[in-house]
Image (cartoon, one colour):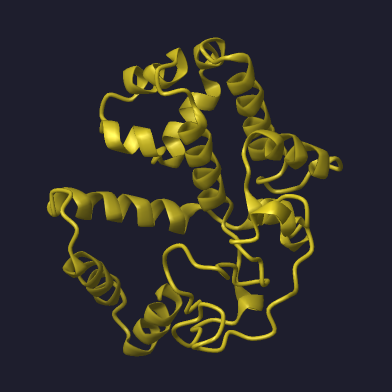
Length: 229
């Protein structure tokens, strides 16, 4: 969207939510809507490649972000956090600490009845709310009481986007296929192994070239590249 990275004052592409106005966070729910994304104004550094009205909210990535917030809120010396290390030995400690999990791992944990019993009362309440949001909000159809379900989660995990933009989510949120997102995470995982965890700008360019090579027709290649970026 052309927005500046890092701890910026106006970091939302939909509205002029003020990240520095902490006393009104989660109290004020309606913020002035962004009228434009003009470079040089309100943390916009580059022209937007896509109109904000055309942005589709992918339920898979929202689930990953919610789970990340949940894991980071866990007591690091608690039984629940240590169980994550035991259940997923293939995930490095830094990734577990930051809550970086993929969809299949999260689904496996949702089916795991033992995990809930290891959580404290507060953590158990947050876990129950997270599962309810995944099942009754992020799938194909929203439950009639979705506001109440999301509200329960927000009591445990403070997430501005869900608090202030609940009406922005479409009714058929889960109708968007998760396959592109899953394929992206699989590809990136392979690139991480190739680069042995080292941060390099070449990794992104290497990945982009693989996308272009996978599209034989030049016209379709330009279209694919535009949508990707």
